[in-house]
Amino acid sequence: MTAHFDALLVQAPLAALGLGLGMAILWGLPPFFLARHRGIEAAIAFHWIQDVARFLAGF
Image (cartoon, rainbow, N blue to C red):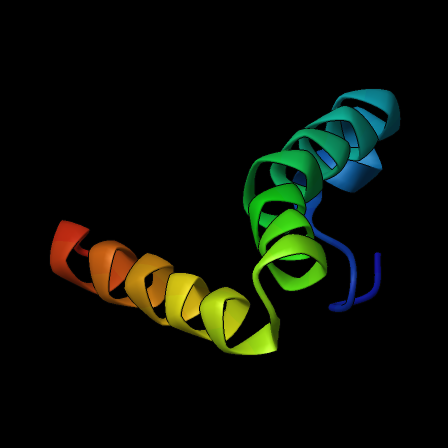
């Protein structure tokens, strides 16, 4: 297959799409609601904290 597709997407496309949806909800909804209710600065700060936590966890 092409290099642009993950192996999971090729082997189990529904599972890959489900994981992608789950990650979008987990990582996308909190900044969205923060931006709507507290402003874009709060969403940016939350995103920065997410990035730092992922970096410290070894990702």
